[in-house]
Length: 223
Image (cartoon, rainbow, N blue to C red; front, top):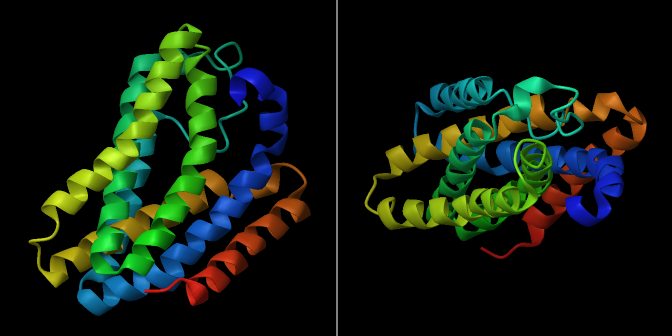
């Protein structure tokens, strides 16, 4: 999409970010938080830990999947370190996959909805990854690294599903709480600021649409 329709992607990325923000908030508040509180009495603490962990992760990466998509190496020289950025994004995507695995361990319905939230978040993040990498390195290596970042998510899910089955309900609840905290951070820090930058009311409408879509979908998805 970036190679063939770069300008179109940048013009419409706000809407994807806003819809994804609403969807992710819905997953966190309608499913991840309630389920984690059922499974562990320390869930609130780990929601905060998950939020703080992703803040520290992105602080080190100096990258936000939504708001920094419009910067290039020419306008912001700090993004020229392609391999450092790739490493951080790969790890972030790996954690997204682990979150999916934790969701399926608790409930197939939670797993499906969590997967949808991650996928919609990964779409603008993938555009960001390639847009910034292509300004740091050549096109073919940038594309290969972007594919590696994308594959990190299913890899994380496989790792999670392989090792999480033997854990107690309480530990799974804490992992779910951290996942919810990370979703809250992604929505609040990465995606929601986009709703204020351009065409605010339309973006706000897409955010509310994401929440309503998730809510209606959560009522119809079979367990």
